[in-house]
Amino acid sequence: MANKTYSEKLVDPRWQKRRLEIFQRDSFTCQNCKDETATLNVHHRYYVGGRSVWNYPDVALVTLCNKCHEHERNISEAELGEWETALIVTEKSWEILDNIRCREQMDSARFLKWLESQYVKFLTEKGSK
Image 1 (spheres, rainbow, N blue to C red):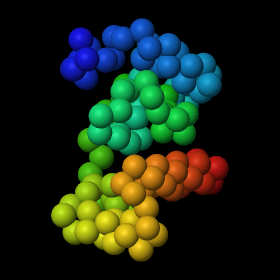
Image 2 (image 1 turned 45 degrees about the vertical axis):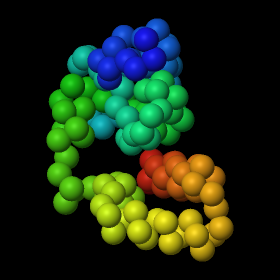
Image 3 (image 1 turned 135 degrees about the horizontal axis):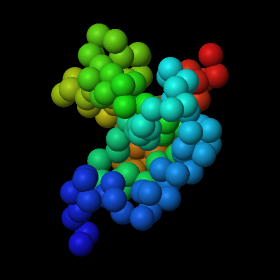
Image 4 (image 1 turned 180 degrees about the vertical axis):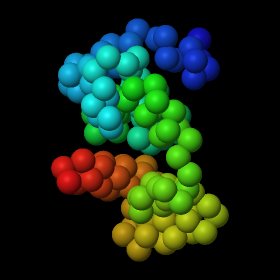
């Protein structure tokens, strides 16, 4: 069953294990409102096409209560920060990103790793503020 739906991936034991690791890291507390009693979710701050939901670095995952998770899922483009907006990829964005890739003489795989590392760095710095 290589082509699982997103819902099927969420009940996969690998996701359940990863989810528990994030809950434990965040002390079973919503990282936005600090609620310790509400039902919790693990929110992906970003997605990479084709990547399994459990194969993300810690900084890409955060514990949120239902209310905060719903807010994050419905957040408007106007409320997004610089990097989040950049990741809403338009044709022009791809052109800009491809120009950077060519300038730096990176193949696509290396460039995607670099781009993800920049986003992880951004999230890490944002989280420390």
